[in-house]
Image (cartoon, rainbow, N blue to C red; front, side, top):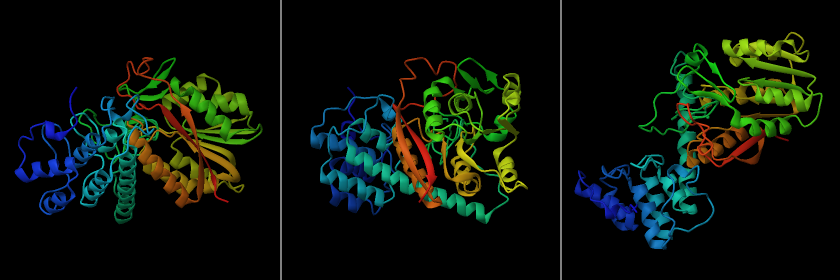
Length: 424
């Protein structure tokens, strides 16, 4: 068994002060740390293990608490440990982690095992340290998002949009929502740059790409998954919660395989059912499958950014909906945030509900938890309350779901299904 303790490795190619910092962090020696941090950056890494002082401090908490659960799967998923209490770090470990964060330690630096400090804390069952890392990630991502908004105000002509990810994307991670990485539908991983990940598709690339339609998935020309049938249960439950009664007015943004639109039609019998879809191949398939012929269905061809203003500015006073679902592909979190900050208020009835595919950061638990909190804060600021429903997800690796797919966009055991309403 390979040890997680940095003291068990030779810290080669490090200055003496950097090595001393890593050792002091692993021993939770606060006095030495305070002295060393005056001259040594808190983000220094051991070249052999990739450990930062945060990794070292968290690994060191195991020895001090005799927690035995050291072996596990990296990234906190799909079976890499859960957030149930297995052990608590002592006060010195907690204070060490807080001190490092205050001095510029980076919450999502990756070690050689592709683990962030939060991934390590989760795997080792150190719930209190894990929560500290999640909170640090939330603070960092909120700051980055605010800076991104500021830069857009400063340079409105900039084309540097972070369109990284499939399905929909909130920065930060694997494919489906870095600083934003990639995502499937709005699904990204917050600012984690893994050496194993190549660039994700952006929206212009996706819309001009050819798609292949299979029984259980849609793939783009690079074998990125646009949508997969394992999402069936998630969409079924979402449709039931968004539209619990017949005769409602429904809007879905992003048709894909048509999973949720089929659920809306079969279980909700909507009075009107609007669908926005931008990809020409998906639109062609919708025509072949008879969606254009349904009497209560209205299909809008184009990007939602172009279609929604026309719906809101309709000459008859605008179109209102009782239920709205948002699940786009190859867009960053900023697209989702723009949707609920600028458009939902003009589309949703006062008592209506809306939701989105919650895939942000879903390739590692810590990123999923960080972005869940970030979105919740942004939703609150925009005037929404959100109710979460936990849905269990089977082991997709074990069932072979990812065979033939370029990269998995989901690695977790649980999906947090969001249903949003206006406050009050």
